[in-house]
Image 1: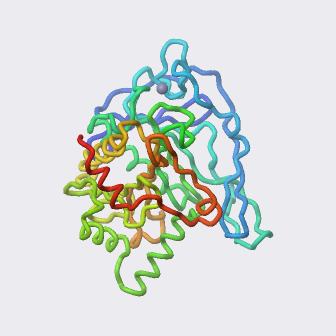
Image 2 (image 1 turned 90 degrees about the horizontal axis):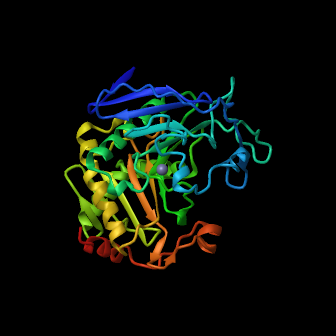
Length: 368
Ligand SMILES: [Zn+2]
């Protein structure tokens, strides 16, 4: 049985061999019933959350993840459609976009009575690693990338991000939902097939906690929403804008941390995917393709990147933080990568080798 989604999309849920769920996202109401033919397996375990008491940050310790698939050859790709003897994570022999629970999740469902303990330095309790980890496969085509997908296909990916954010936000204990994509072996991708992940946390991540505190402080001082002011400044400065349309603006931030860093934000702030309008969603595929094409066009090679969807937390700060996409590439020159060295890794203090305006200039100069 399929369920209809906003924007005219459809979703069908089916069970997997170890009790996980796979969700098929489609542009039409097709009937899906492919059975997972792999032998039954027991469900994945759960790790733990340890507090780093020096900075009060939770570290998800998931030692059961060491044996996960690492750079399989194409003919053994675990996220291609199932075909013949190759029984993959996706039981159907055709699909458009799927989302399934990660086989080796770094965070998993809450045991009964679970609670995030109070922080108390080295005496803080160590709870189970509660949260959720999902995999989203952008296309059945192994040799492709988000940039190369049709706008219709990217719209389906967006529909899945909206649906997952909405649904996962309802799960008890989940405080934050984070869709992201890593691309390229340079940033640790273990499966080259175009895909992303969705993590949901039972605690506020350090980055979001900091962003929220800064936005709260700014609001109490000025009565203004920081994110709106940042976007207004970029629109006003103009020089760092690399792409825009009626609903979205893409820019190299004034103080970017990486040689190639692009933020893509809706002109009208929304807290998260769940509250994105159909008009905003429909305008995203074209700007996504443009931004990623500019990125790949700078050196004429596929850029390794990390693309992170920042969203407001599920229950707090929804008037102060907003959905936006941050893409950062570790490539510095055609043959050099930026490593997070002493200052960045040790102190969290970034040093940029290039003026952000220079980087924006290069991105704008790419002929599409
Ligand atoms: Zn594949």
